[in-house]
Structures are given as structure tokens and as C-alpha cells.
Image (tube, rainbow over all chains, first blue to last red):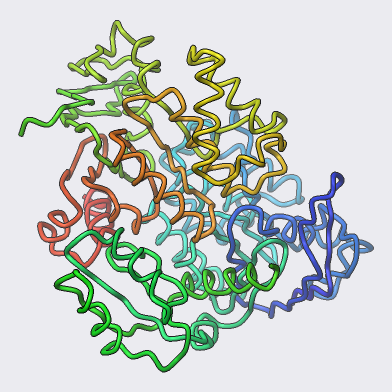
Length: 308
Length: 246
């Protein structure tokens, strides 16, 4: 279990990275910290792995305090930083051996933990890590974070810059690790990855916007949401929708426009009728369930308003 | 079609030793088009982009950027294009205005041109009052919008955007695409890579690279019907998977 209580951190120069964050991550949970660059995710993760000390508040990892028990924590935690941090001129195998020896273990002894991931890397075992493709680098970094058989795995944006197919594969690997009982905390700027976690926190500007299971978060969406499609210019239709007094926001979501009402009483029939009066034809309107991205955008918008 | 071609690629091949990174690419990009350049990691996108920007020479093929040849006229190419990526955009320890002045100077703009372009572009973003702020104190989303403005300040024919919205919050990501649309409507050609498949839907045409080749190139609408998919995410996964497990 990871217990984060009232944690704040301000960097020299005045940038407040985290502002009074509290959350609890259970054993064998796959927990997601979802937010853009600069939200404070990396700061939080560096504290959990004992590389950074909070200005205020406490963090416990499996009962150990990150400040007073930092040595014990380091052997229990596997950490994959956001930036590629392996030795580019060592081979795949040498990198894993290096990380194993730091933790007084060997590749052979803990091979069973990384087997599924390493098998995909083994054709390149003699290649320098710096010469691997992005997807392979990421798999190697995961092997190095796992080779000492940690109880807790902390992954800072493992899928950033990774293509859609490799992202799916990576999440399948995480599901396998979770099944083995490992506690996993992962951060990502990709909102769609939230649904692959047991629970998530949406984070922006050093604050938690909301936490819960993905379903709890989407069910708490406090307005009506519609998908609007047209064969004509979506861009100009967005502007038309934004001018309507009943609408609080309208944004492009791929091939549709997601439209948020100001109150719950708006129905798709009403919105359809309003749009039929405009010069647009062949408009399709349907009420939809919000995605995590809709929730994130709604919550950040509210934050902006309340902050003036 | 009589549309003006700003990128012409015929039989582009790039080899590194025995490895073929770009295997006979042929495509054109038209003036004012938003062209999405997609592909899995390692498919050869970066290699091709470097050649199109005049930073690397192809092994063979006939490639022209705004009419200039990539073998002999790379300096002219560099003057005709703008480039921005998530990794390299602006100098953190310079102010907004100093960044514009620096990049304007590199592109050979006169002092007067730098001033008028900076004023025009900052006013368009509504942040003229931020001109003396240090870049490191500006939120990432704004930094990316500024980097885009700097990339087009010398009025290049083409602007190359390499994952411009990576890590950016969802609202800013959409505002960034507003800028892309605006630039395209003014005649700029936009060549963009992204891992966000919803953004692929916003492109006029999209190419998808798989194992060094262009596996598909069409409008998002046509790609979805050709491959019988609901959205571009499905198209991408279908094509990228097909390659990996052959």
C-alpha cells in the first residue's frame, strides 16, 4: 500500500509542483495518474521512490516512510523514469546485468519475472541500448526496473511517444504483472489509458481534480453530453454551437463534436431542433456517455472559472 | 488536379548498411494541405522527415521540396520550411521576444520584419503582454503555441510539426489544432506527425507507414471505408498489426 498524505512541493524558483495531495493506493492495484506535462506527476513519483523529499506531508510505501526508511524502500520499489535512463553504450543484456548486480541479484535468478518481456528483446540482446527503437527501449527499461523483483512498480509515462499498437501491448504486459500481485502506479498524458487502470487520479497544476474508478468518474459527469456530426465543415459548426446559450462547451473529438450542455434538461431532440434552424444540413445528434477526456476537460474548465 | 505540389517524393530509398529505413516512398503534398504522417515507432517516419527537411540525403530517389532538390539545394530548402517538435522548440532561458528575435535572425529577417511578425503572431495568440516573460515560466501548452508561431514567422511554404501535441492537456491540444487550421487556411502547408489518432481525423490526407513503406495514403474518410473501420485508431492498428505479425 502507498499512502500519500497532504504532500506539497515547491521547487527553488517558486514553481509549485504539488499542492496538498492525498491519495491511497492499495496492494496489487493498477493505479493511474492521468494528466498533462507539468501536472506534477513526475514530482510525485520521484517522492514515492525516495529521490525527492516533500516540503510538507508524508508518504509511506508498504509501511515504510520515504524519508527515514529510504534505503529499504529502494530495494522494494522498481522505477522507470520518464526519460530513457539506461546506458546507451551497454548492450541490452549488459544493462539488465548491471541493474541486477546493483540489487545483489542476477539475471538468471529473476529471469522468470521478466521472461515474457525479455523474450521480445532477446533477438537484440547484444545490441547497444542506444540503438534500439522506441518501443524496444521502453521494454528494456521495464526489464531493468523489474529485475530485482520489486513489490511496487512506479512507471513515469511509459507510453509517451509510443505508437498506438505498442501502447496496447505495453498495457497487456502491465495487466500480467498486476495479476502476479505487484502494486503498479503509472502516469500518462493519454486520457484513453485511464480505462485500463483499476483507479485513477486526474491531475492538473499540482492538484488532484478527482480520483476514483474510471466508471465512477465518468458517471459523476454533471451535465448532458452530446455527440454532433456533420458532413460539412466541423470547424465552423463548433463555432455555431459555442454561441448557443444552452451550451457550455463544444470541442472536436476526432470525427465528432462533443457538446456539453449548461444543464441536464437539454435533450438530443432539442439540440437537433436548434441545429436544424441553422444553415447546417445532415447533422446527427446523439446523447453519449462521457469519456475520461470529457471529464478532464470539464473539470479543468471549472477549475479555470473558479480561479477567476 | 492542377493543385500546386510543395512536396514531391518519387521512389525515395534510404538505407543504413543493409537495413532499408525508407523503401521506395512515393507521394506528393499539395499547397495548403494538412498532411498527417503516421506510422508505428521504427517505421521510418523520422528518417523520411529528416530527408524532407534537407538534413539527411536519401540513398536514391527524386525528391523536391518547394521545387528544390534535396541533394543539392538543402540550404534553400531550410529557408523555405519551418520546423517544430516537442523535444526542441524554444530556448527556456530567453524571453518570448528574444526567442522571436533569435529565430527571425537565423532566418535572415530584417529587424523591422522581426518586429512586425512578432507583434502579429503574439497578438493573434492574445499574449502580446507576455513578450518579456522568460520561456521557462510559461506553461507547456502556451510554449507549444509560441513554438508554432516561431516556426512560421519567416512565412515558410511548409511547416513540419513532429508530435507537436505530445504531453499537452486536452484543451490546449485542440487549441493547437485551431492554429494548424488557421495556418492552412492562409496557404501554409502543414506536415504533421502524431500518436493521437483523433488528430489524424483532422488532417486533409493521412499516410500510414509500415516497415519503411507507405502502406496507405488517402483522406481519413476514404481510409476508414477502404479498411472497413470505425475510426482512424482502428485503421492504424489494423495496418500496424498486420506488419508486425506477418
